[in-house]
Length: 160
Image (cartoon, rainbow, N blue to C red; front, side, top):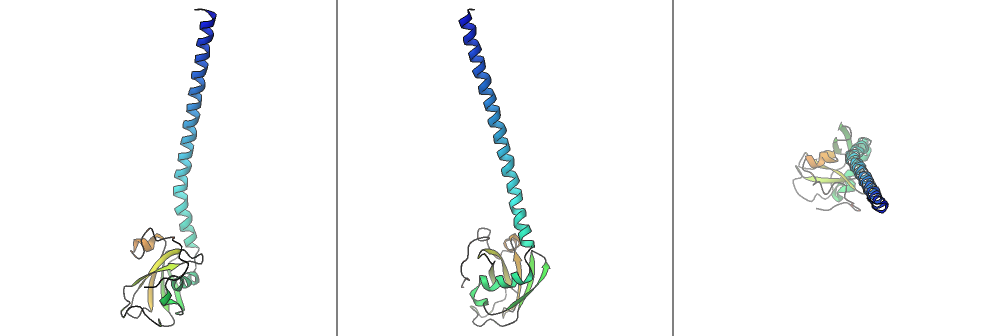
């Protein structure tokens, strides 16, 4: 082997080593990105749950008329069944113009102060004076709202 051959062989080995090192760095970076994405996938729902746990009964009461026009002016009062998840609400004023004659079992979305759907309620009686309300995924589990509706922007109270 000549000196030129050895130099050429050394150059090829050096390039191969550099390529291998770059591939390993990309693999480590990809692994880190995947781990970060997995951590976010766990953290974001946890943050959403933590946020819903901070909601008080007055905010839940305000979310009923914010989500449904026929409940405006009814002055709901709510008590926590399970803080941040389930609430029992009673309207202190009757519904002025109910959309249906028998409201028992009717479901309506609730909307938070940022005008996003944060849950929903189900009427427990025919006149719609008592409601069982659920926040977050509990409302989806109760089949009050669909999963794609949770978190949707709702600038005005719904009708019908």
